[in-house]
Length: 71
Figure 1 (tube, rainbow, N blue to C red):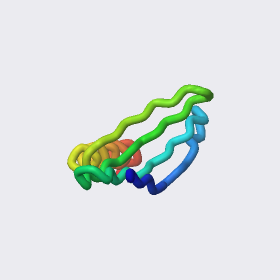
Figure 2 (figure 1 turned 90 degrees about the vertical axis):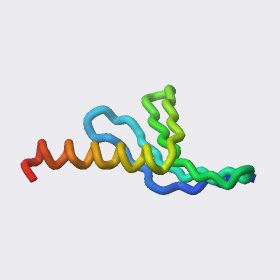
Figure 3 (figure 1 turned 30 degrees about the horizontal axis):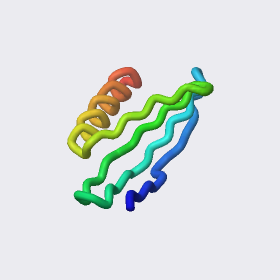
Figure 4 (figure 1 turned 135 degrees about the vertical axis):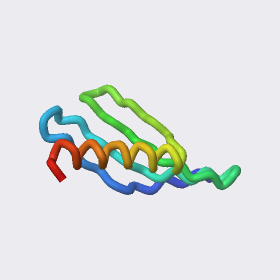
């Protein structure tokens, strides 16, 4: 049976989109993925990404945030 565990949920202040991060553990194959759900009104965008891609995405976002915040 596939397990879904909520990691984080927050709302973007300017656009009002709701972001939800979940860990998806698939029973068959034992693979874990990060599910990113973006809700804009009634519309959903969903990404299921592997740990390597999640790390690359996190690094890129952190680098960008630091560059615009002058750190």
